Length: 317
Ligand code: H2B
Ligand code: FE
Image 1: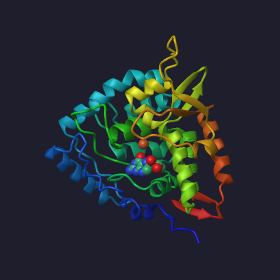
Image 2 (image 1 turned 45 degrees about the vertical axis):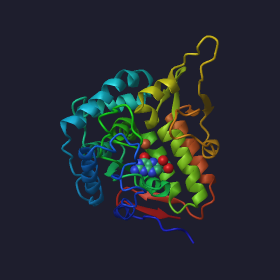
Image 3 (image 1 turned 90 degrees about the horizontal axis):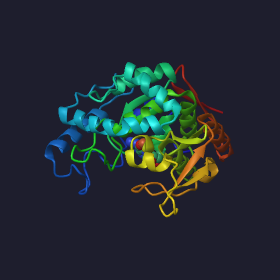
Image 4 (image 1 turned 30 degrees about the vertical axis):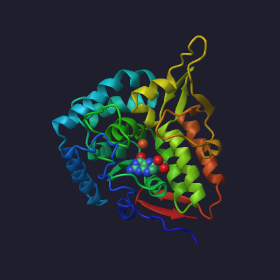
């Protein structure tokens, strides 16, 4: 007996609101905890996500001046670093998305415009979500080439810090990567494997996701470049993970780099509040994908799932 899982894109409506937190009740150490205006805005955007239905246009958010300023502050810190350390696939998409999806330092792009663009490139789409989902629900979305994405922004008092995913992370970190075919296929591969998987396998897939989609590195010439969104949206950690300086004396802590291997990554624990002590390095995004496919095929599951892009449904055999 296999656990229930969504079989059609419309059934993502059934999992999208199973958030682990309501998306609006902030922890007492959240930078916006004492800001009633911010909390009111979070509640408003949570409602937008909760009311979203799969076949409707994604509501456009009218971002305030404060919100756009926060976005701009992150943009200013990231721009040069991304140029130095982001992988070529990211940079190519980012240039194109500035032109086609409304990315700019004074403009926050809208999920619907990004979706329209991604659909033409790789068939990926965004879908609003109010807060964190379980690993299973979140990964199940990827099977439908759907990325659950928040619509709120971090608190303006700390533009370079966020304790949770926000639009700077989703739109600057994740979205451009989904315009790359290999990366899109790679992500969907994890999603398909998560459908009806055992809890143990879902955890392995979630850890693979962490060490790749969030913190993955790939080789380019003789340099390590970032393709993981946790790096692409964090100015401190991007430099930490990619800069190849080795201080004389060798006293400074440097992360360990391991070759990308899903069987290892799926069992590799990680901290969530500090820089990663270990990064996984793929030869290329194509290599990341083929290793992931070999790994998912090795998992014990009584069926294989595939996605039919014509009718947005899963078929299994
Ligand atoms: N939920 C949401 N809304 N966004 C995420 O980025 C996210 C999530 N990441 N749930 C998941 C968990 C990730 O940490 C893995 C798959 O567990
Ligand atoms: Fe993320």
